[in-house]
Length: 564
Image (tube, rainbow, N blue to C red; front, side, top):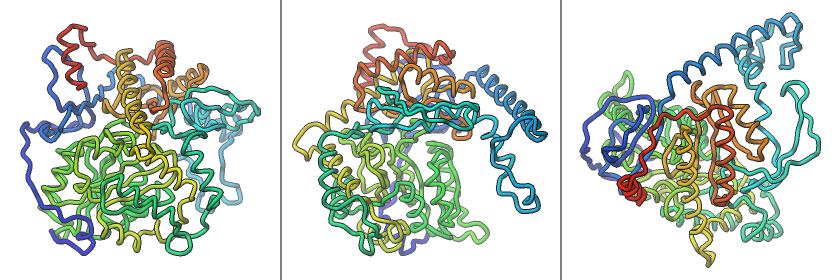
């Protein structure tokens, strides 16, 4: 495999082989894994297995994830539900075509019928007939900081969610269990707020220029120095938009003749960046190391299509926490494969930075790994830090290269000074440099809340996806009608949640996605759990067939050992 000049900017790691102490197993599509052998008296239902083989010797602590398989009867009824909705949708389209039913969607004008259509009728079919029916559960305006509780603007619809009318009233005290406020910094009081106000008075709220022209402020340099120190890397640079951090920097790192290996559940920003780069893209099964290794091996053996020349560069794209699945990347195994096949690793820590690890430094800190083993460390400030924008960290040569070649660095407006100050203040609190133990308390509170909430939901009989330490907690709803029903019933009981369905998820795996925060108290979580239990019984959402372990002393000892 050849190495270009930009390859040398990324990594010079030596190649080391690692041995696996387990036999290969057949790949599945989704999803269950445990890196620690459970006691023999514990029985597990049939679960989807997507992770393939794994090397438990690479993990310093238990790596527990659960993805219980969709019950067959539930899957059949879910397909039937979508089938019935589709049939009725076509019937209603027939009525709209003959003006029997009013059509509120955008349509082509009669005088433009010979033009290339602006609106693809079939593409809008789902929006017209399915999404609109449950649209009232999304896009509700928030009227205050989205902390542990929030105020929502009241709105009414008189045409089945086609349009909304705002009443001017505010629903106060809604418990927020859906925002990415992992460490509880979404607040308008405290040290961050005081620092933000002072920075606004000094710098204003905007820069009106790019970093390479008149928009490079001293506060930007201060932020980048702090980010590099927080991550444990040589250098870092920041960007004003998290999405653009991925989509505009990946094309600067790879191009024609390069190969990108992307996890099938990667975020849209990673997918867009990979496509814009012009590189060849191959997708491996989610968190499946056997699938990834097969692609790496084939890439080394066969090289580029037609010419069979070695790839100029092989870049692996993964995320720290996958926001729809609640799963955590198998980083120790990814790094082992990356070293073995001399590939490069791009790690997106949008959801994991601040939310994982004893020091809040993301998935690298969570596994106790060396940051130097990750070639490109990317993350966003929009979740744990309650800011905006993103960062890339790595070797100084890499960052210097991106400053000159990244479209996001050259053409985008600089980060707002108050936002930069918000991030700096929050990061110093997490690092304990503010002279208090507030950061350590937030990290500990988030970890305890996550473990408690996941355990309680599982004990109630709900199917919960993801890793035991992930603050993103997907609870399976499956059927399309239950997406809207669950959101409405929870809001009636003063709980704000996020429900997600097809096409954002597989058609049979609609879900409610809870995001746990350090700002949640145990009393708040108990109130939320009580309401979920009530609504779960009302809507028949307790699908789990998992056998609960017997409350014996032996099991309790084993459970205590696992938690330790």
